[in-house]
Length: 325
Image 1 (tube, rainbow, N blue to C red):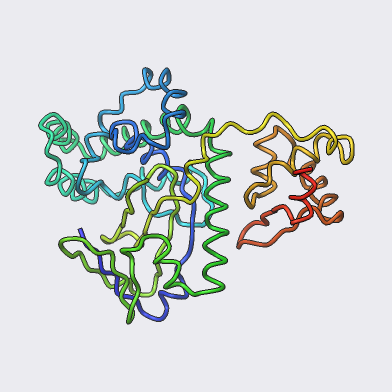
Image 2 (image 1 turned 30 degrees about the vertical axis):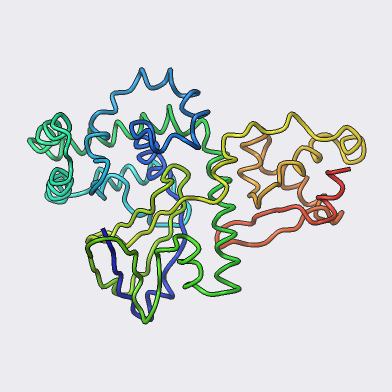
């Protein structure tokens, strides 16, 4: 499908990046049942194999045809750049039954698998109850499949947003779109993703949400239908490194020089990372990590920059050189 989003001047001002735990949860289920998406996630699939025996994923899988529409209400655009999944799940639970019905039917028209079609027909018998059951299932999927890995996933998503923000500063929004997907072009107020037929929408002053995702590769997904804010989800940079095991520690000489914890934190800053993410990654308190980062910054080994709601830390060239000695 081709999409054309018609921008006003205000849309350029209100376009934003965001991270969505619920989007990642639903997209992860698609990876499980679509072997074409396994390439970058084999280690994760192996790790969650036992957990999958505790889940009946058939309702979500039925709503994800291999080609076609998935209900937008199941993973709606996040209201804020960084949102908790509990709030997202409550947003889904509040979706009107008539919206559930219309989006189920849209998906049913694209679903070719007979068993999946039968399951969607069953869900349509009581859309409100089906919506609530899907919320409960997504909550369980989050707990078993995503939450244990959320620190490293969020770290990669934050690094991608930091990279795109630099691109925006240096080259403008049109370059950001092209870097996300070569088929995504912005010209004369029209954002287009080319394919074989067109769905068009006037954005209307609300802007577009740009949503990096670790599980969406190799696709770029677009939410363009009302009542949702237009959203473009795209493959995050560096997804090939996501499941690589972190190094056991930092060089011994560096530990003796600056201490084991500071050396560990310095070694962990391969990408711009927040205090909260570092704290989760290493099992430390955020205040403790903040104190170590301040010391590393004062020594010229770490620098930082603000990215909207948070501060991201990264190694300086001196920090890189010290770590490699």
